Structures are given as C-alpha cells and as structure tokens.
Amino acid sequence: MIRFLPLLVSLSPISLSPTSAAAACIPIARLHYEGGGDWYSNRSSIPNLARFVSTRTNVDLCTSPEPAIRLTDPELFSYPYLFMTGHGRVHFSEREAARLREYLSAGGFLHVDDNFGLDESLRKELAHVFPDAPLVELPPAHAIFAAPFPFANGLPKIHEHHGGPPHAYGLYLNDRLALFYSFNTDLSDGWEDPGVHEDPEELRRAALRMGANIVVHAFTR
Image 1 (cartoon, rainbow, N blue to C red):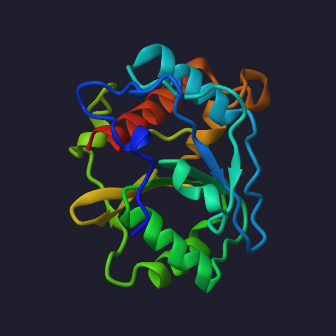
Image 2 (image 1 turned 180 degrees about the vertical axis):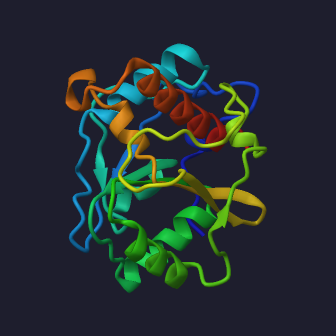
C-alpha cells in the first residue's frame, strides 16, 4: 500500500512542525473532481484559512494559493490534507474511487464543505466508494468541536443556503475520522476575503476558528 511521505506523517500531537527543512509548511490541496460542480470556487478561502491556522496554532500551513490535485495524479500522496467544495454535482470514476479509498485508508484526510447543491451526488458517490463506512452525524460533544476553539453547540452556521441548522458528518476508517463533511453552513464562504460576501466579523471569525479545529484534529488524531 502507498503511504504518505515520511516527512508528512511524522506530525504528532506534541509537535506539528515538519521534521525536515525541505518542507517549511504543510500544503492543503484542493480536490479537482468531475461531475459538473465548480470545484474551484471560493478561491481566497484556503490561503486565508492557512494564515489563520499558522498564526494561531502550532500547525504551519502553506499560505500560498493551494495546488489543485486530481485523485489520479501521481503526487496525490504528497498531500495529507485535501479540501473539496463546490455547487452542483460530483462524480468519481472507478479509478478515482479506488484512489480515494487508498488515500484515506493510508492516512489521508478529506474535508468536504458543501457550497450548496453538492449533497445529493456526494452522498451517492461516498456510498459507492465506502459501502461499509457510512457517513455519521457528529454530536456537539465530539472532540473536533472542542479544540483549539470551543464550539459548545457544534458546527456554526455561516450562510443561510438552506433553512434549518448546520450538520457535521464524519466517515471513519479503522476508528479514525478520515473525512469531515460540513453541510448547510458553507464554512469556506466565511474564509474568503472580507469583501467577497461581506459577512459580519463574528461569522468570519467563527468560520476560521472551526476550520482551524478541523485542521488540528486531522493532524493530531
């Protein structure tokens, strides 16, 4: 089985800094998927989140524009953290499904943030990729809502795309949270430059803090 580069899997709950000067920061890669969804949306979100995380936690993320990666790309396993968003549909080919299974089983992490309209096709694709590992809703008491920033009520609501509360779902592989799915909140809208959506500062702050929790959880659990 392919494993992640030793530099990237050497991260621990004690020290989240890479052990070699060859990699001064950890990149978040954006997942370039097929199916019609705009995988490229919210372009300023990841650099802004990376700056927030790097200045407020001991996770050193790369703040330059994130690389776009396909599941079939040879360098997939160079990136321990993938981010996926968009409106519309997603579809994984059989080869992509196999690579996603391999990637997450080898220790990779995927955060999916529904930007409105992705939910139906995403659930269908994940059920195909992981028939024995269903999405489960994460309660407010889950550790991902506890540190480094506490969210007593669980996932915060950032945008009112749908009525009703936001939902946080997880997919577990071997008792490890390998995928986090934020639905009906649109965290990455809250990570964008202030003038893009003109969100109140408290919403942007909540979105960035929740993003930091997801990143820290991914690298310490």
